[in-house]
Image (cartoon, rainbow, N blue to C red; front, side, top):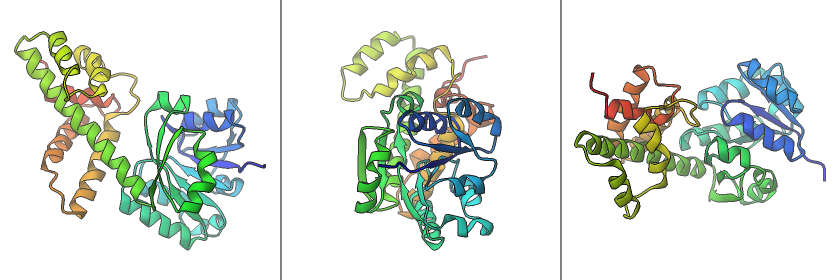
Length: 291
């Protein structure tokens, strides 16, 4: 069976390993990125470089978007001069955006004669490289059945959450936990350190309790050593996703004052120049070093 040609828009931290997975699975892949120099390693591995979004759209049947936000997707795929190019294409949106944003993109896609589905993921660069991402799919039943073989390139745990918007909502729900759990762990760890309690003793008891989450151990060394380099998920992305969740919470009348506090902490981290550091860098705001 002939496989579709895939165009991927946005070859950043997650987009690049997604391209590599597709190439390894035998797909023909066209890539476009705002910073074209990032495409060189992918071209060397067999991807085809698109000089413009229009060229990428023309070259493929399935258009995967891994761009920063809804606005970037709108700017790249939906300007008036590209309206006719989208007819008959399928847009697969995989980045983290709000549920209402995703539904708006679906409406725009349909208006342009295209199909649209969403498949945001849980996991980071190691999972993307190994094909072990968790995928939350917002699509119709026929779309889910048709695109499961393609989605299985990225992960084995592929969940059909419901129609478009529901996958985006689940993704934001998970990322809200990333923000809340990281902030809470940093705060507890800060008190332990400042009171002179042995961190090993605290962690041993925490691991035996119902309060434990594996992410605590993943971020422990970073926080202890205050080394936030080589991020899989930078602080600026955490801020974006936190603000997306707050927008959705406001839309539904949810009380999110606790998350608003976390958002303020993350904003301070960006102001301190930690936007491109690992998101555990919020530890430097919550538990600052005494000068």
